[in-house]
Image (cartoon, rainbow, N blue to C red; front, side):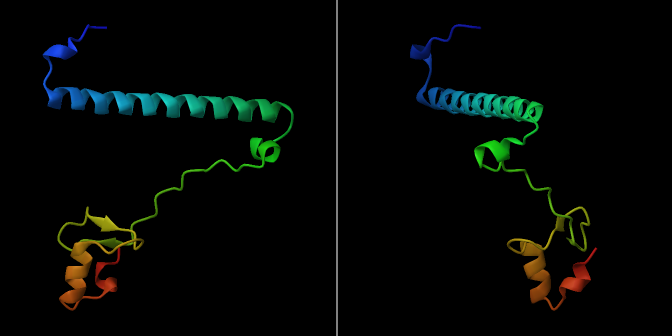
Length: 105
């Protein structure tokens, strides 16, 4: 690893390095936690249990992204699932007299 002379760096460069280091540390910690959870789940499985059964804590599973239900009329690659806040292009279309069915895929 290359040596960095911090005394020669500008404040903006130091702040950028600080952010990059914080991201690297967070990524490292997340990876290690995931490895530890996987190892614990495997060990619990060897005894015929699920980790949640032993700890009483349910590990969160990432939810699959919802399917797109609406598409931009002029740019069909721009979509919306119908969940959350309406995109501006939907709001503009509705204000222009269109209905959600006009945008339906």
